[in-house]
Length: 129
Image (cartoon, rainbow, N blue to C red; front, side):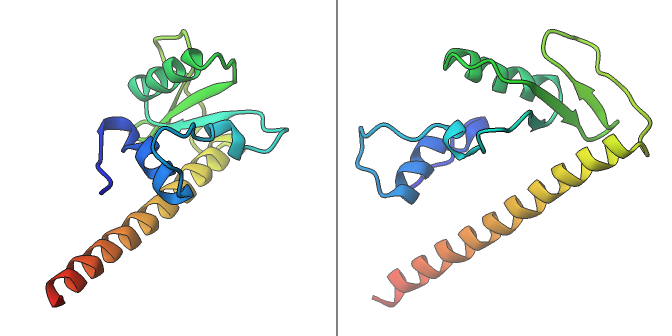
């Protein structure tokens, strides 16, 4: 059974489950899924989420450009800065960043809905037995 655990939602459990890896087998890293020429990681959230992601990356020894995009005021947080950067909300850059974030939200919501439907179907099948 897959459990949900905090910020990361059991990433290790999910990756092991979806990749059919045995317990104790080292997982792929997130960077295995990025193209070789990627330039930036965008975190959906403010300073807290950015710091969590940055801490994880540093722990793994990575130095990768990363920003956090906070939704409420559409502010951009950068590492080692307490105050967010603010840009014209209608600039091409901000429109692109919002489009990226909203596309990620759409994907995640669809994925989670599908996962809930699968779980419900599995529970129904168990009841039928």
